[in-house]
Image (cartoon, one colour):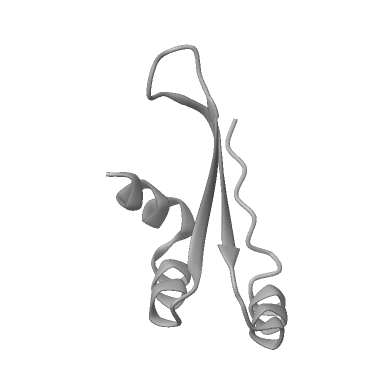
Length: 68
């Protein structure tokens, strides 16, 4: 279920590229008051190759999703 939410938040194109290239998604969650409920979840992409990371950052430099 979590991956469905991540896919929806990132969009099909970005999610597909991350999976095709084998990048790692990193989710940082802050706990809410109710068990298994999060106040906030930040999505990061971990890319080992610095050059690929730079190109990815340039290509998706305007991609930033913030939800209250």
